[in-house]
Image 1: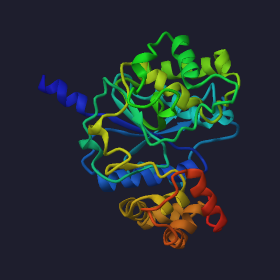
Image 2: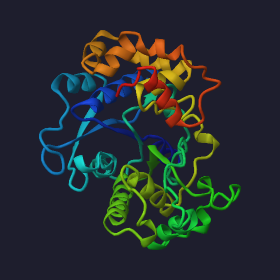
Image 3: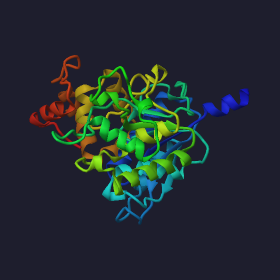
Length: 333
């Protein structure tokens, strides 16, 4: 029993990396993980789409960045992008799961994330998958004469043979978006990447290609992954994360997403981690090739932007915050 518990406590981490922005974000992620959780015993995979398939050209990581990632004991994991690719880049996180070692628990993070504490100490229950609750009510968008939240979400649960009622947060009022199981797909975890990834793939393709009629007015780009994810998690017996996972989107990790947003709203600890992970010369010379990192981190524009905002009085809506950053001339991505 002790050996089984020890085995279950070891898990793999996967982020997406490919030519362009994501390779630099993946390098920052890897550097932050090694700095802030040196005892992490699992494998760190940087999932990289192969040339061909649904990605035009060559999407592979540049050789210098690849070498830097490998120097941080990250393993480059090629995968086939057959169903999404350029037409829906968020689909990378779905198709990459099928390339991970089968049967080994995993935690997926979006590449625009940093690890700020001991990820290895988080008490994941991989038999009860979950995902990030750091989200806004971005989907569905309710039309005046269209179906409401309950009708839209129930149509999806019915399509996949899932129990809708048990997914609801009854502490929230009917027809309020927060009542319905909805995640940010910036992190999620489960026990077996092949089983989870196959169902995630099948669910996302079915919604994309043959959505219930209640979705006829709904946009699925870029929300398809976040529409499918709660159905997959619920189907595997998971749900909303409990307090034991508060370190994710808290003291252990931060999905910073876009550097101007990070400098405007994230904690001092997060900014310290971003800048410390980016500081070594072997990292710096590579990250400076990406203009937003060069200007925001190394040229001090991020710190100037940060001085304009009171973290205790930020706009409640991310859209309002984005617009203010743009008006001040600091928006970059």
